[in-house]
Length: 422
Image (cartoon, rainbow, N blue to C red; front, side):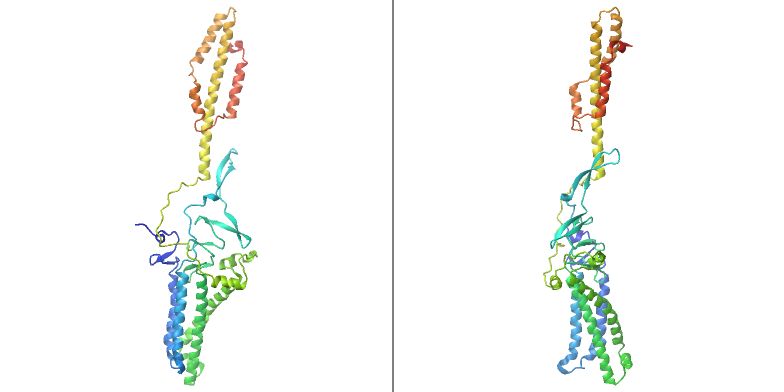
């Protein structure tokens, strides 16, 4: 049975319901966030809102306090689920590097100064965004050039489009496809804290009016209100400050990652479209569909041959170089033997042409020299020709070999017969 994409996913994510829900590797922290929301609201409904049902008899306004708290809490939980259980904008990784970006070049080796082939891969390249050049980087893990504003999350092990940050409270990366829901979740949590704090304060006021007591006595009568007000006050510093910070980021069209990393560099923000257009881009545009179909069947790809590394290319070139030297030495040895044979044959002819008295003695000596040469292995041109084109694919001979053999040949051609016998 063919496996699905989520079953062989290389990221650090967790999948539920057959790949329909995707969470980050720290999804357990999501349970803490749920408890921090559900438990205080439950205490509020039981110990505060329930006692206010009959305090406002007109139109049963007391019940509205309880209903609003429950509905608003459900709204916050839905936004939390939409933020943490969806694809934040993961860029599908490649199974192999983009081969069109490789450049085959030759670099000089330290040993002998010879040229060795190497694969040069550009780590960055420039793209045009809103008429301005933007440099994008290559991701070694995903084997792709990251789109503009994309970054690799080390926790989820994925490249995420318009990467903002990885939020441990929601257990997910915040990116292109869930940033809107993240901001709505944070701002709604802030409003929920304000609502609970205000209703608790109202309940303290009601107790003071009903019992004609002081504030301290009212606080002692409803300790749950005191705890909830303290909890909401502390939470407001967190979610309220986070909401204000992201309002600033949206108005300037920045991400948290860009703000912290490039703040000191005073870069020109090429993505800023103006305050109104920036807000419309975040809240009024359609959410892009996911680039990953986690429930699709895995398509098996044919294995691709690995690209040669610099070391492998150097070894291969060294083997070819040694083979060529061996062929050149064999060919040079053939030329030396042929030249020696021609020189001895010329000496023999010259000796025979002489008519001196020492003709017989010299001829015997020449015959001994010729005999020693004739005992050498015969050389056939057709056999040696087969080795000229072997492996090297070239008819060239090493210059040092030809030079050495030519010197030997010239020295032998200038030796007189008398000196040869001496």
